[in-house]
Image (cartoon, helix red, strand yellow):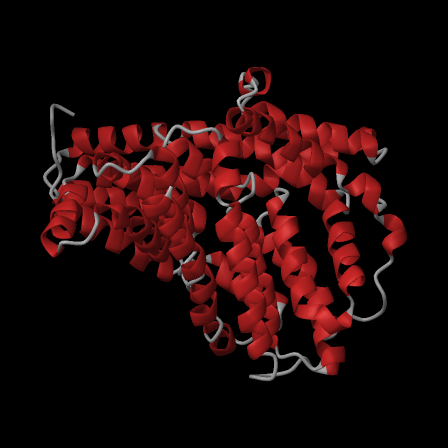
Length: 431
């Protein structure tokens, strides 16, 4: 682009326009592209340079897109086979009604952690939550916080698009980012259970007519022993390299197989274990269909990330941080918080934060792994705003009005904020 630097004002205008258009219900992909185009033109680019900005931005996310499509195979198997439902039911039955909030949060965390999208994980566990909440007198506010908080905790240790984006943004192995998020995730789960327990008598309770009718017929789902094979194989294979690096075992440390291979392989092994190998076309097609919307949004995010990367916005932010006297380490979580809040999406927020501020974060002296974890956890703080689909999907799943769903956001921010603070303290200052 002949050394073009777009004005930071143009980048902000483009991002703001994209947010407004998303709020006005324009397709997010077109909103992001249109914001990038307008921002580039306002920022000083001509028509030809604007195209280059978008092309360079979308090219930067292609590695993430490939891995997200590969993850779709595992997601399709877990959802379509009923394996995710089996795992959720097993966890809730094991803990019983007296520890219902812990059971619901843990179930959503585990289902998300094994590769199911967080909105889908909430949809899977929501009928169980409504039934348990009705019997135990637990408010919808506490129930949804348990599901959403548990999902957030599982999301930062999962092979989901957001984690893939965090890893690719700083050129790291997916397994390292997943493993590094474990302690913040556990802290997030604990805070979820504590806060949800305090809220169990606050707000609307689950009415009898909102409870799904009848018992779930588990005979059509695979047994637990077979249902956990796919995620177990994926986790074991993904963890071989980091365990080898930590333990100093060269044989394991040299096992560098990309998640693009591991996730589909684990899915196929899981299908065979569940004796559903004949449904490979059905499950993979379903997984691909479920990933299509995410991939398109990632491409749109790449376009506006290209705008911000070509601008001097990151330089201005760094200068502001330096002038304020606070540690440059905070740029990583702050960028994650802001970008995810702007787009109401964890994965899109991570794409924008790493693509726009990645170099500036590393230039501040932050290690790549620390940067990835802090950006990632920062993106979970206020990512469930109304301009995103997660807000509406979860509201429908829990039979909540828009106003009731809005009331959950501050408590979700407490969970995400806890994980971000733990990650920042641990990786930004201690390790």
